[in-house]
Image (tube, rainbow, N blue to C red):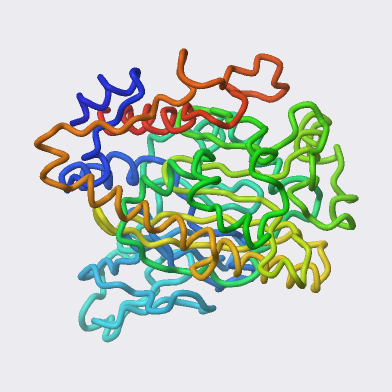
Length: 435
């Protein structure tokens, strides 16, 4: 199947079974999630020593904790005695973690502190060799905490490449940065994680069909045709994004993703370049995905157009794999720290009504992702050799063309009717899975 993917992708085709094959999924856990940099938390979720959250890398649980020195530890949640989960809460604050089986106790750096009946049972055993196992590497950018299990992986900066330049456009526009407004929403969809990840690379073609009701109820303040102007950008291998913005500067609509004017007035070239600032100012929507499963969304929206005008919504999410046809969505809503409490509350409510488990966007998206996963594991798709079409924007297909005058890094294409960003996702996926 991987040979078929490598052969078909240059022609804009992907085997349907990529979205449902059990053996392929088991390989993903080791070849992708155990080797790539994976988002695990935002620093604002663990503000003081001892505060922690429990997160996933692939299917495995990890404790992300602010340790006693003020640094961040990412610890495999498995006791060194019998492998039992030692963290029994999704979030909290503690001085230590205690295994419920035999009572081994670990500090916030994962060091073994002791165990019941130490003198009788374990005296002489080396404590230093029996602490919780840490992730091989940890790094942060704009408060976003990433970890990898691969000690030989490149640095986070090298892994992100020019995607870092684009993350600045959402998270790095002033000195205050962003904070998470609430614990993440979590909900399960019977779909393959790649459907969501590739969608957030920049699948804008579905907006006028699947999300038609969003325009009908006024949840999004820009017309569909205007929204489709802008760019798809392959920022680095595997990492892509889509920007809705007026190409010629006319009829741009909301600036800075619809964020309040008082906060956008604090955005300046002290933190980003003048080019980055100009792009962010013109941008209505930012949607992107850091390979494999960390997605970012910034856009104007409202949950009730009759009562509230659209405001800027900032969100990021992960698509946690639970099987070839099952994922858990983790969705965070955030805001710039220097927004007023009322502005944060307004943004949060707008997010709840549009891009949450009960929001119009997510309820729309879940249904086709489920169907794609069903097709990916169907007998007929395998027997008939179903190949899915990813040809939009290739030479001779559509009107999208490379934007050679784009001032930012990466490969930019305009307008947003194209699927090069998805092909970029699968090209890197193929490389990781085959290497």
